[in-house]
Structure formats: structure tokens, C-alpha cells
Length: 352
Image 1 (cartoon, rainbow, N blue to C red):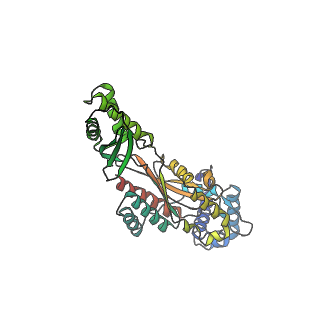
Image 2 (tube, rainbow, N blue to C red; image 1 turned 120 degrees about the horizontal axis):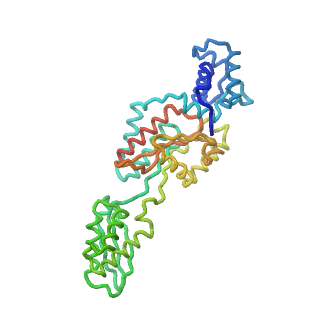
Image 3 (cartoon, helix red, strand yellow; image 1 turned 45 degrees about the vertical axis):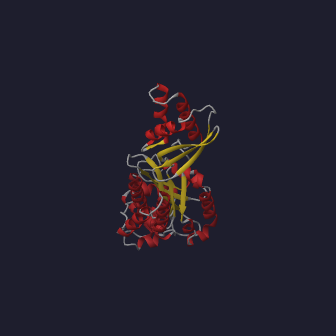
């Protein structure tokens, strides 16, 4: 979607356009010339003159004129022009910042804090709150290889948060005594404070170059273990993320009664979480908050919905997830955009 530069509007057209968009976003109803004339905006012109400006803005594709109303409302192109060229954002209030901070500080696993944050953002914005959970890359603390009988062993992986994962290994029957313990100690010593993906490359390089102190049997056992752990994606940093959605019921407001098909389409989109996750993944590449308005994104073209999303980063500045809201195109962008941005910054401190 493309729109003309805001500089192509003269001062009067710009002011009328701003009043129409802000009035529509506030009320959800088309804005007429009589209302504009009575807003005390300092236009100093008659309703007839305002109607002429409205007609010009409509001709430029910035406003639409519903046949059931004498008023105008912004098109998606108009909303984009407003967001990019006119909107003045407001900092989150103290109450909003405190509510977000409390949700981020939710005790327990990080997923609990992310779910609470999504719910808080939903409540504050009256939209559906969404958080894309970072793909889990556990930092492993210990590996134990436990014999189960001839030709079999259990690899027990313990991460720094106390999580435990098991892997079953097939062993050569000729494996000498002590090889399991030697391999366990070797891997554990190189996993401290690192992800398996980080450690696997270093371990393999040591073995290949002959720098490891392992004998042939233990080295082969380490290779088998790394292969098994990598097969199911544990060592892959790009594993599928998890999407947390809270507050979808907020989409069923009074305005939705007259637009049930749009809302039904939106709820179907939210139910297909992988599609929403793919959309949010686009925001991972952004340096700041991204705004997708209606058909600018194919996923929400039918439902006519907007998405405001911001990436959040770890202590090294790497993007590890995305947080945002989904709602109708009639959003209070000036209020919600900085709220989403503040939430992303708060989550970054949690992840860091």
C-alpha cells in the first residue's frame, strides 16, 4: 500500500484530515462537516467549505464516504498517511507502565510472565494481546550417560533452570567399561553456561582435530550423543516459536455487531496461530515497532484488522521474540504504539 506524502496537503486539508481521522478513531463513526465545524479547531470556515475539502480528500483516496452516512472515515491509505505523517504518540501513563511491569515480573517460568504480559497488554489496549515466545535454547549444565543394559544407555540432560530431557542411545556391545563416564565428564565440562548448539561445534572440532583427551570408544560415544540430540532439534536455534494470544474476546465489542463477518474472519486467523506467528516474524527484522494496517498484510486482508508489533531483544541485542496487539483498524494508534514499544523494552530486560 502506498500513499502520497503529507506535504502534498495544504494546511487546511491537513487539519480537516487530522480531525476526521482522530474523530473516527475515537468514536468509530464517520465524521460529518457539521461536527468538524463545531469542534473549535480554529478552521474558521463554513460547513460548505469543509464539505469541499472532504470531497477533495476523498478524491485523493484518503477518506471514504459510506452511502448510509453523510460523514467521512479514513481509508487504509488514509490511516497509513496519518500514522506515518501526522500522529503524535503519547507516552504510556504511570498506571499503564506499572501494569506492564507487574506482568513482566510474574513469578515462575518465563512463559508465565509472557502470558501475563500478553493479558495485560490486551486489557490496556482493549485488543487481543500477542507474544511470540522465543525458541527455547536451553543452557545445559550437566550430561549423564546411564547404562540401561547391553547396547543401550540413557542420556540425561539437565539445563541451568532445572529442566531435564532424556535421550535413548544405542551403544556398541564392545564398549569398554568407563567409556560412558568419560564421555559424560567430557561433554559436561564443555557445556557449562553454553547452549548445546554452541558446545556441539566446539566439541566436534576438538575430536576431529585430535585435541581431545578421549579414547576412540568415548569419542565415538560423544559423536553418537550429539547426533541424537540434534536430530530432534534440541541443538537447532530456529525451532518453531510458541505464540501466546490473550484477550481475543475484546474483539467482540459493540462495533463488532455490525461487522460480524470481519470479526469471524479475525477470530479464525487467531485460531490459526502459525499464520499469525509468521506475520509477527516479519516484525523481528524491524528496529522498532511495526504497524500493519488491514490489507497491507495478506493474512488480515479479509478481516480488515491492524497489527502493532515490536521485537524484543536479549542482553546481546539479538531479537528473541515479538510482542504486540491485534484489533480492528480503528485503533488508538497514538496510545497503543508507545505502549507496545514500552512492553517490548520491559520484556528485553526480563530476557536479558
